[in-house]
Length: 123
Length: 123
Image (cartoon, rainbow over all chains, first blue to last red):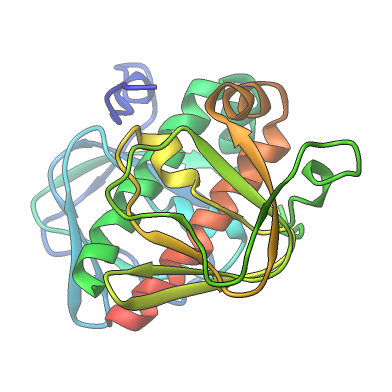
């Protein structure tokens, strides 16, 4: 099951992207959610309250948790640099999970890696 | 996407189970891994070092992280009561993910819920 956790296949030239300026908030903790994002370029900080819990770069995803469990955003996402994002709607997400098991495994791998980081910080 | 996170469909009467006595270690942090477990009955404590990070009961899964990312066990699992477990091999896990998107979503939901708990403890 070894494979890169990148999602570059979702950031091809023909997909619709969204540009965010450095310093702008992409979404806020507690907000309702209907999409996740793949980072096409730039850096994004994920923070809970005022504490940064991750800084992510190209080919990473974020915002998947609220889509998976239909809860509000669990963290705030802020563009550290100018950022180009590929939004993935809930409908697209469900299609990808059902049609491409490899995508599902990559999302799981992303979540597992974040849990490992949190576990280490917690112990 | 609202649905229970239970895995009771995997703990039917015809499946092979493994019994663990109260107080026994099911697996240890750092050990190699080739299966996850569904709890059929009893309570299991998940701990990192000496810190308990979760206590799980029937229809929950544990041990899925090491299977997802092919890393050693990230935590220790201990039977709090006598426990009956259904082991799921890596091969079965990959089959379930590829054939039943609903299973994949339930695993993701489990991971997302654990991340939310960790995020709250961390902030």
